[in-house]
Length: 221
Image (cartoon, rainbow, N blue to C red; front, side, top):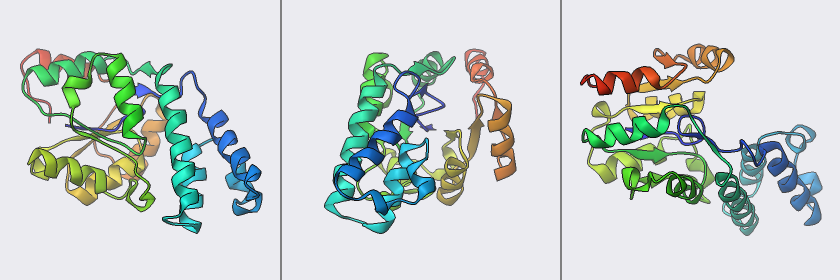
């Protein structure tokens, strides 16, 4: 079971707002004399990963990218302290583990942030050591299947025998590229529409039906 992190497992920026993090990254770049590195749209984004990717495209592999990625990682670790669990995620993770499924996190967030959050919920043992996330090689972020392929290889799992749970089109594209079946998680109607428009054939608004199926003794695939 390959889980995206922010969305299916928790709301990472529930308390430590993503838009504030994005603004802080933009401000930090300005303090380095790099205000002009971003477009007006990128400077106004509410998504810190947009800022990071923009710099990564213009200065791939640079010390600047490394420094910016580390700043975002620290912000994500801070956010993990106030993240809110997705409804039914904790018991679903524990139940899947109890019935013998192997679980991995495959995320565009920092694996350090994922570990911080999972430790706070007592869930680390359900995933360790399989936490695969963002590195400074930003070209490997989803929709690239790199983190999914790393998880499959480490667990010795065939793609067709796995399942990816994600909440974005980039998760779906990465799963397709890796050959992994995909289940979309949509916390609301708009997100469900976006996933279905991207081609997701199976989308749930809640993880509760999966938990119910598992507890009734049925495999979820």
